[in-house]
Length: 254
Image (spheres, rainbow, N blue to C red):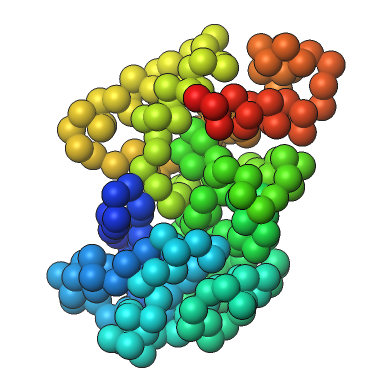
């Protein structure tokens, strides 16, 4: 089982310290910068043995080399991004498995935000680290992928068990909720969740992690195959890729 510590970085990024309780091995997931991650690990008395990256963007890999220099850690990252992520030691492919001590992660290929994006699902610990593909109440911009790729990636994530905790890359949830209400305002579960999110942020508390069940019920990007949402988009006869693309277009202009 894992102990997971959230580490705020930059303006709104989250890195994570992920510690296998049986062995003490500790991974830093998506360290955008080294200093806060190393400081958080030192405060807990943990030594970083691994870095795990979901994709190549600098705000997810910027701390790689400094952490590796400080700790001698092993860097695990997606093989499709092998030439774009610094310091890779283990290049992992879709369906590949990686052991952090006694905790086993499954790599799930989820392109769309980037062409090489990977998620890491720790089934026994009920946790998935999904970078910038899936956010709480949102999804990443399509910098390198297509609406169809992103929709298929979100479908893959949605198939994980509902009690899976979703650890995403940014604290975007309050803004995502404001947008979600403009396209899915009749969703009572969404309205309740938006109110709870406002309360958390008013106290300076994170909204992450959410659960996959919450995302499936309230995240409009994960509900593009819901006829109610398709009708709300003015696309009652369209397929989910077209509905997703319209929701993403509206979000980009929001």
